[in-house]
Length: 367
Image (cartoon, rainbow, N blue to C red; front, side, top):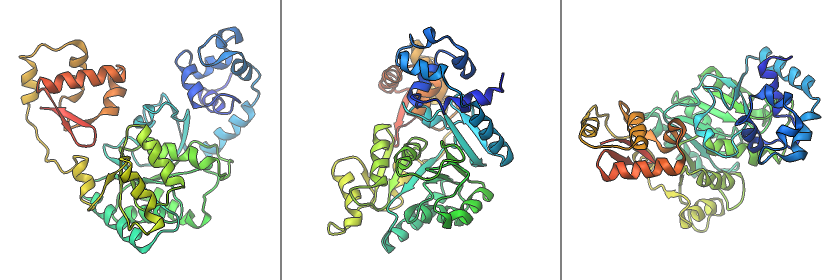
């Protein structure tokens, strides 16, 4: 018998069991029960089948899981499993959310306002100025800044966040046993010391690999309210991240560039294809996200509910909105235990009854 955390770590090492299959299994069993279940039971689970069931039953990598546990205990790393309260809630709404995350830091991964700031590794002076101005603007809204710790726009965003005392989290494409690029090791330490952190789904000894970066990018896109693309060509990690953010129903913003500038061609393409909102000024983003709105303690919306007959789904949504300035659609989906279509139908009905107001950035509040 092992501690519960060993089974959670081990689940990420089982061949043929990725995040999607792990989610399916966890709907039927706890992590430990998955390894003790009969093969005949596992293979009958839709989406698992005999091959994956056999991979689980033949798994013999618990020693590797024990080594990982020793590593995270030694370096005070937090393992965040899908079912943990501290796991980034926004990621839970992504079908391929990581089964387990390793986190070194103090920043709240469920803060009310989180954005990812991404772009080319070989930035222009224009991109540097835009990134620094953007972070300065977001500082007044107390936004947590997420990026990939890479050269270029990522590093500029992290450093600007440190300058303006904003929490900043680097999402890594490798394990916490390494820092890549090595030149950013000092910055990474500063980020942790300043209340930010480092986050990865890769075990400690996994080194950077080109296949890991697209995998990492889905975490950058999925754990935030919005993805902001500063400068990018038409191909590369930033375009992948922007596409993922669109698929996850996140807001995407892009700063336009000259039509002759290849380093801005990706941003221009995102805007042209209606996959990103054009940013004409850094103030556009907090305004579009509804972060400039003055707080209101009016209870008119709650009072209206006394005179309107609501169905059970509508009552669930209004309860989640009570006493809060605004709630993102993903949080309503996560907290309501309703299907996304049921949540959408309830919100639409409440809007028509003037009980709920829709705000920019897929936010809702009581009217």
